[in-house]
Image (cartoon, rainbow, N blue to C red; front, side, top):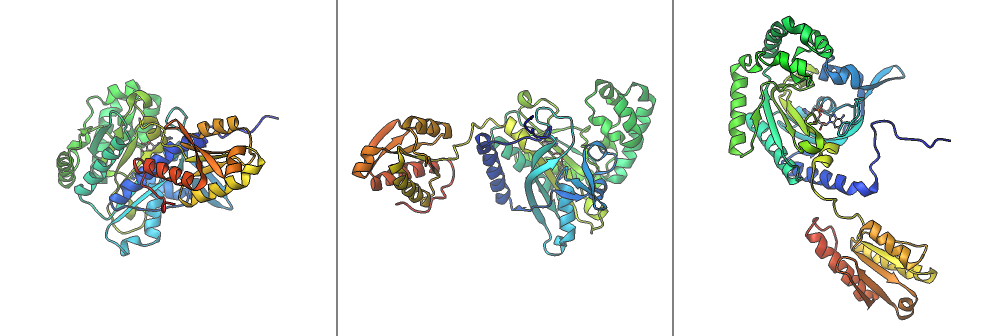
Length: 433
Ligand code: HAM
């Protein structure tokens, strides 16, 4: 029989890799709490109509990439992104009545039936956030500068921020007409996909990577000529604030994004071009000042972003995070198992993550296990140690080994691991023995 395999584009994350995932997830949670955001968790499944209304029915995601299904008469979809669900939750719980400004962050899996390649999967994880109730450009600038700094803290090379302003729906429809007037005479030279988009969503042609489309839009009008004075002022203040925060950016008047809800500020951050390729954006976001009202709520301005966690993992040059186990207890033979279990329990009470091989196998195989886990300390309980109530303390980092009575041995292990943890992670250890 053929053993089962994971679904295409949906990947396992094995314990060997989980350290880097957790490092980024923790760093993100910490960054967000430093900036006044609180975590929200919304369901992985929502009604299909929510995504169609929020993202627009002529977007790639809604047209081709949603995992939708019927269940007992309901049309449901695995969430392809987090904004629609966040807005739905914000409205459903009438959050605007309780606080003027709401800052939410989230992390979790999203689902899109895309063609898979490096950095593009069918189940992927986003680190995202939404702010409701603040329409000022200072809010945009703070969010964007925070993201650039976050990527830098993850040692992502070649971080590159691009910003643009889309204006409101009125400006966009005037621009759409002008773009159509420019592109219709060139229709024959567009890619087949863009010929189709001309009728449904011509702005997306600006985003196309196809050389024929790029040529056709080269001297097309830009959105800037169509946006109104308020949006223009908002954008120019945003740039001033980014300058004040010393956040380098470039303005790309052709930047549009794949979802229909955006208005005004738009941004994308790329990085690590060599590893990710030019098409793979790390973070995308922008304002969606009309969406809350469009979904039936009051007029509440909003802005948000999402970063692809798998892409951050590819882009980040941080080395593998510290091991997930600190110490291994190695009882050699059956008689050593009980005192070994007792020592493991004592160490865990001090917050030391330890493993014990209760099979009591050979020392050689237990040391191999210690190396595999990347632990620093090994406590060996052989026959002679058992006889005299001692233990061998092996420090794999300092390359030392000493025989000690059990009490002082525990103290040495806790001391060394605590000192090491102070230089990496904030210690969670309770007290010293
Ligand atoms: P998005 O641009 O569709 O925006 O996705 C944001 C990020 O998710 C991308 O830049 C990328 O890093 C990651 N991503 C998207 N699709 C995939 C995929 N198939 N595989 C791996 N990573 C992927 C949104 O989702 C908006 N909800 C962002 C937002 C929040 N705008 C306002 N608020």
